Length: 256
Length: 307
Image (cartoon, each protein chain N blue to C red):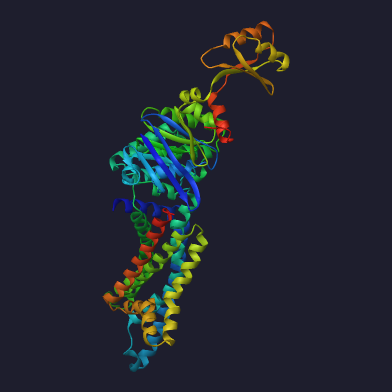
């Protein structure tokens, strides 16, 4: 555990010793702010209409109207942004030869993978924490429910963790950071959207499989505030799968 | 102590190291000498647990590299050929990180960092970013990180490569200062590094062991003759004939502007040769012993050694 923390601490330090960490946070907050503000605006206009027409007011729910759309929109940005945080983790070590230091230290490959992944997750948590400031405003002007909000954040975190697990894997495959960025972007997009599009027009077993593998269905459940363990298990096993692949790739490379 | 037995490493068809056997006693400095692509780096990577061997056995500090990789990793310090530096860290924070992953106990880390900063001469740059320090300092940081957990065994891959002569001297000084406390294996393709720093040498070429032993033993076993190289005012046939007439001299060869005078091992004709040069007024500028090991090495790497 101490070894994992040593690696994680080093990676976190490197995010902030270069401008990378700050730039990622700034751009994320900018985009988040944009999505959040437009959702609030839309909710505001909808409420004005509802005030004149009691029929509309039955559907009023600030969680549904502001947070869900923001969470949905930000995932599109996440799947492009998060690989930028993971691309460096293994690719750069290999390119600069610093991996030789890690692999000749009394650390296991599993500890190294876990440490690097933990650092990426901490970055994600910080981002979500920063974004939560805007959600706090909702409490001063409305009365959103806290439980669905937290479950929504959990969904967003798991989704981000899944994107990052894919990113970490491709970082371990190559020493080229551009490849470690582009490939996970495409793959994440596929898991996130394309698969559910294909599932939409498919039928039978194929539809069921595609539907299950695609992120969207599992994510929808959580973002709408439904704490369904199946969705959590799905994301956790997805992450473990890619982390296991990462570990295997590194382990096997040394035996070749 | 380092003990290697029948070590072989294949990359597919390519045999990088083939049936290598040698031994380095505790507290000695040994050189792993060979031209580029002789299998030096591969050997070191196997010893440090970075690469597994295809076959053979290696024992470092009493632990088998294959069976107890973590015990080996705890007892060695390793300077890879490409110094593993994080450019965005300061020297101190980098050393602190290495101390942590080498499992130096928390309470002793500060002292360990202070110790290596001192012995590697890093005081002036300890607060600076690694990307901003010179090549020589980077190499010293590499040596410092290898020593941070006070390992019994140090494995240094080309520790002086790419440095200027002054820096080379400094690094060699640091390494020599470690003799006695540490067992050191350093690789190099430059012979003087071995003769100046090391107690013994393992010579490899194309992945094979060509010779190994202490410097004196090697020179003695391969050189049947002793001799000197003379730098005279003029090195011509005339001077050569005069020297050949000295009793006991077996061979005199003209090598460029110098003369090489040889006699059979066991005798010492240096006084006689010098006296002749002075008596005959040959204008003696320099007289130095022939480095037997140098001849041996040249023969080995040019493939002229039948052994």
